[in-house]
Length: 312
Image (tube, rainbow, N blue to C red; front, side, top):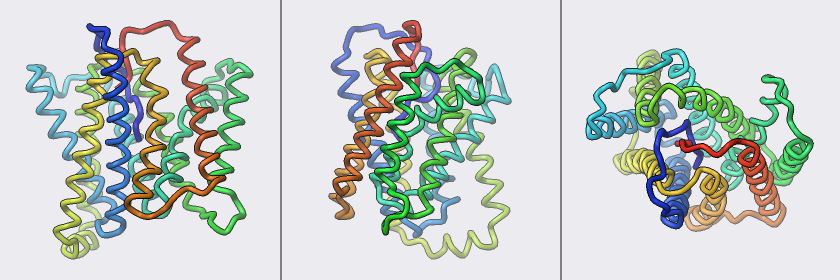
């Protein structure tokens, strides 16, 4: 999902907003390509193995990036607990996303995962006891209507598996709260490296515990499927790198709404790869979710003071 994780401690040193916008659009396409590849892989590769390769690849790339920057404090962090919580939340988010892509059309899974800003509003009001204005509550209600249009409970195409992308949106909303706190004490690339490291170690333990069933399943995976897994991991990691570059060129308030462009790319790839085209009501629902999410982001940005740092 094309989302802005944590806060990168970068200054926008040049006024190159157009380039930042172009890179951000490419970022959404990259994340949509990663999700499309997960759907192409389907059940050919065990879910744990899929997650393990994805985070191992990110760990290696981010670690190499840190060394290239001559930032050798790879394991230095201002909050070990928050880094672990962040990794658990993002790993859970990825697991829910991958599971949802196995069972649901790509546009459905992507649009429901885009409910994260609305869920963040709910969490702020119910858990953090923040004073949420009526305008934001209205956008939450509109987003909920959009969700109903997409999933249409009671319809012939409805499936309980919609809980996966909704779970992905919920965990990502929590993930962004933790990322915001970490941004005050840690560098963005260090945080992304540590997240990948912790997630990879956790997956190593899970794979080891499930090796009796995992090893025979892995032996059945074809070479073509492994190529798709590597491509998926490459696209996901490339997306994070592109986002960093976009944020160095354009303000966060400009880039964040563009993340919803992933819905359009998801619909395009779904048509090209799977011959699945959103019907009229699903398309309307996707637009409603995007509009409510963008509105929530813009209201939040208007309320917040301009910041030099940006989410990654």
